[in-house]
Image (cartoon, rainbow, N blue to C red; front, side):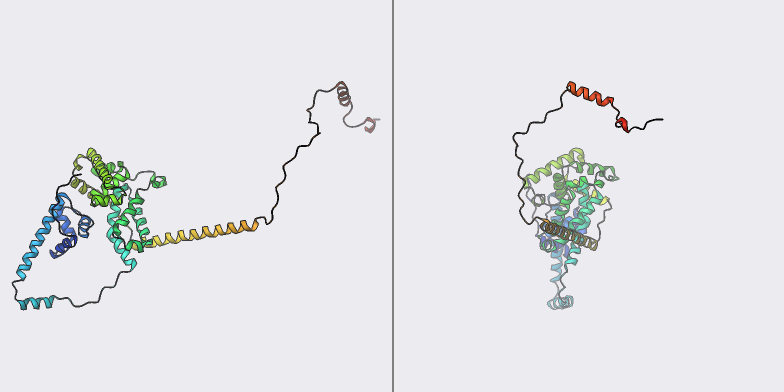
Length: 365
């Protein structure tokens, strides 16, 4: 893909400083540029950069904030040196004690409150299932809590949790679960149903790519890294997904309009994530359960091994020797026809009384 030369953009820290100097919130910046507050937060953290018309609008807004700041500084320089000194003394904050560092639980709760609501909506766009979206986010954060020492020092903890939630959401094993064999009720609006239908028709890697790039706002290298693909492969998936969406919904051929519709579709559903303590406690219970199950399995394996050793023979018993052929024994012959003498004997036996000799029978009077 060819791109036009990008408009110069201040560093991420300068973007945030200009916004705070202008007494503006991230939501106000997002409303003026036409994006979501999460996108502005990503721009200020340096994880992503705006593109196209959004970039031009964002640069123009930052330039206006720079001009306002310069005018303010010019007016301030008109004060006398004594007035400036007094103003600085009056406005100087009192020395305060350094803030105590957050505990692991507090840091986890802050990350969950920051990421979970938007992540549930993203998983809903990825799966079309409300319960699976909430379950995917909870499982991802439970795994993050189990590996918190690793996640806490990660360069992008939010990206770590997002990748884990996406992997769980698109797992093919969900199709074997009884409650996932039937689709959930689609969105109420017809346009939302059409967009959700075309998204679910895309293969999971393509659906994930278009959601990360056009929905979340990641750039192409980050999208490729999160989907475990090369940058050209991610670009090909994105182009194919856009072509499929534009063929079904021509009004979404513009990436800006597609981003807006994805945000609207995600926000129409009333999806709520569980509270952070509930997720942490659930993860701890799950970890305890599997730990006890592993211990029980190990104990059963040790018991079976001990029983086998206890009941095993202690001496060697030679096997029974195979049978040997005996010479001189005539083969068994089947019964043939009766001779004349045998016929006469059989007739004689049949003619006699079967109850015994005659002398044993009582004589009648």
